Image 1 (tube, rainbow, N blue to C red):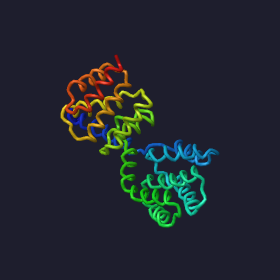
Image 2: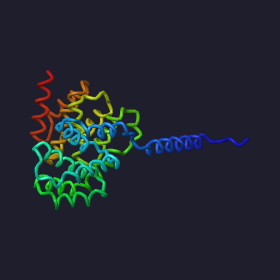
Image 3: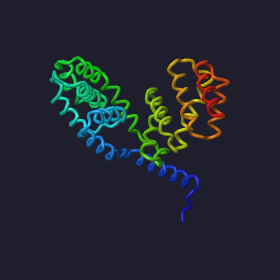
Length: 257
């Protein structure tokens, strides 16, 4: 019987592992439950709750066509009204904004129609801005939906945060840090990802927007409760290349005493 070399065995194991990881990464995120909640919330009896739902949906990265078809239908029903109450006007404007942040090109014609024909400037302005946002929204939504093998054991909400942190889009990364500050997720991978970026840039970064991003990482790492992250924030307080970042880190250190 022909002997199989250990090198070939290792190569075979590597290829199988890579195939499995790639296949797993190709599986889309299952966001059906979120979509259902957003669809139900469109019918909430309170206009403020409906507006809040549209705001959350606009930041979610969801691009479900059936959901946004319904939003498009409601926008087309309402945009010509001249007599909306202030909160109803806000809701119509947010319908337009959400449609643009779907990132779906199919809605450009509708947004242009609303922008050109809305009698109320607030609605027209939001529709124009939403049409302009379609392309960047499509890129951001794709980044949020991307799968990383190392994150697939995380809860869905944590995986979505990780995807933002791994993206090339600074706004998405900073938004993730802000969300982590608010929710304090129990997911070490999120904190280590931010810590890695902070270690790499705190001493040398000078760009104002980049420094602001690193400051948010300091704030988010402060909620992890882990000693290594406290120590890192202390290093930033002493050695950051920008005074603003030093001040933010120092304030965190003093609060945690």
